[in-house]
Every structure is written in C-alpha cells, then in structure tokens.
Length: 362
Ligand SMILES: Cc1cc2nc3c(=O)[nH]c(=O)nc-3n(C[C@H](O)[C@H](O)[C@H](O)COP(=O)(O)O)c2cc1C
Image 1 (tube, protein in one colour):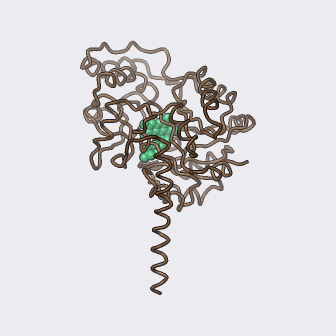
Image 2: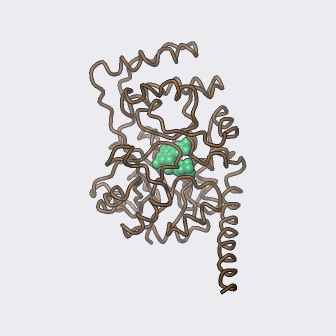
Image 3: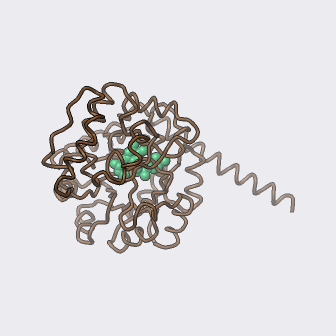
C-alpha cells in the first residue's frame, strides 16, 4: 500500500494532530479506533520511551496511527545567553514562589536517538516537523515499513520533502495552533493560509497532502477535501476532548476564548507558536526576539509552565491554540470525529444542492 492508499482506506479522513503537552497515547488510540488516524506526539519523549509507547498503542488498536517527532537542534546558546535568559525569567518564577532553574545540561531529547528508536518501533506512519530528513533517513524509515510525512509551511518546503523522498506532506497553514513548522525561511515569509497552501502544494508536488490549520468541524474537513487534500489534520478541535491531556487552566482558556484571541509568540519557547494571548505573552512581547532560540528557551520555561498549570494559573502557561479556537467543543474523541465526518457529508451536500439550484435556473 501507499500513504495515499492508507489515507484513502480510512473510514474517516481526519488526522488527529500530534500535540506535545495536550495529547498522548489515549487520544491517539481513541481516534484510530473510531476510524480516523490517531497521532502520538513523541517530540519530547526520551528515546527509550518511544518503543514502549508505540507498542502500547499497537496493543490497544489494530488501526493505523502516526507518530510525530520534532526535528529540534540540540541548542547551542552563546556564552552568557542562558544566564541572561534565566535572569529575565526570575521575576516570573518568583510570582509562583519558585527559584529559577539552574542552567540545564540538555535542552531537548537527542533527535538522532529518537529517530533510531522510531525506526526500531516501526509505526505505520511518522511525521516530522521543524526541518527535513535526509534521503537516507527517509529510506531507513520506509525500509522499516513506516510512511514518512513531512510538515511544510511553504511550497518550497514541500518540494524539499518531496526531494528527500517523503510519502506525503502535512501542509500547515498560518491559522494553525502550536509551533510553526517552518524551516527554510524566516517565520514572516512562511505564513501562508491553509486554503492557498494546500492548493499550491497540490499543484507543485505529486504527493498526498494533509491539510492543517483552522479546521474545526465537518465544514472545514469538506473544504480541505474539496481543495484536493487526502485528509484534514485537526489539533485545536481536540483540545477539549476527554482523552486529551490539556491542563485545567488551558481547557478553561479554550472554553472561554473570545472572537480573535490568538497571536504568534516566541516568548515561551524561542520559536514562533500560536496561542491564546495571556499576560506572559503580552509583557514579554517587547523582548521576545531576544530570548534564546528553541529548544533553549523552551527548556528554561518548562518548570514555570508546569508550576503555573499546577497552580491553575492560565497567565503563565503556553495556551497553544489555532485561530478558530472559539469553535472548540468538549466531548469524547470518537464522537467528535464521527460528528465531523457526518457534518462534512452535509456540507458537501449543501454545495451540491446549491449547484443543482443554479443548474435548474439556467
Ligand atoms: C497544543 C498543540 C500542540 C501541537 N504540537 C505539535 C507537535 O508536537 N508536533 C507537530 O507536528 N505539530 C504540533 N502542533 C500543530 C499541529 O500539528 C497542527 O499543525 C495544528 O494543530 C493545525 O491547526 P489547528 O490547531 O487550527 O487545528 C500542535 C498544535 C497544538 C494546538
């Protein structure tokens, strides 16, 4: 089978976006069991935990699923950069009654070791974000029986993944919640909306495209398929799912989201990401370009965000969410994907009925 075949054979052509911090194996299993494609966020997992996690999903569903890795650099801060970043964060830690963290020895899991573990675990599909694999790495995954999906935010990035031999592209539009996946250009030059991105990537590369960004219900799924996408990837729409691990204050912020609540910020992690604006984002806005690049800042704010979540304080945690967050609803993941797929049918039927009315008038 091909990746196109796998996606086409899904009873429900929806991919649950793997979401570090918000989703783990329970959500992936629930979504895959319901007939869509569950996604495991393995980006922050230690290499030794990847095999057991993939095995646990396999033990709970025979349906396909996708595992995501973040191609983060190790982090190579300039001398003094970490101390300066910690000093800048000290008042924020003090708000929670905490001392700032000591300079860590490691900023992110070793990507090469994660990749080796993933190749050994051989999930049905794997997606990659923040960079592009080498052709050798792509071939190693494929030889293990894993389809490779590359995240692209521009047509040029999609071409780079196609040249590396990927089986498919996840096209991440500007609307998307969480980190931007750009890796060739600056973020400012990598902010294409989902409509334009899916259509132009479809025209540029001969690979199945998964549309991501701003898709919150069946109307969005139908729109993605109409654009030629093989499936719709949804993240924010799952944040309130029973099986998601979204923290209590984060769920509240999603539930109470106003009309236009999200913004891109670099302040939490050193890489631009979209989330609901809170006090940390507002007050750090002026210096966000000065914080150390991902994964250094990400590691330095991790204990702050964990403590704030524990203290039920939404103002100091990263409330990652996409532009259409206001449409998020709670419920069981299986019910959600079934409802969205039935709504997609209704949306397609509404377009067909509109077409018929026009034809009848001529
Ligand atoms: C909370 C959250 C965490 C995310 N974590 C990841 C991740 O670990 N890896 C990844 O490739 N994409 C991640 N994303 C981005 C999604 O893959 C996807 O591009 C996005 O959710 C689509 O837009 P939407 O949120 O409007 O549905 C994350 C998104 C959110 C909202």
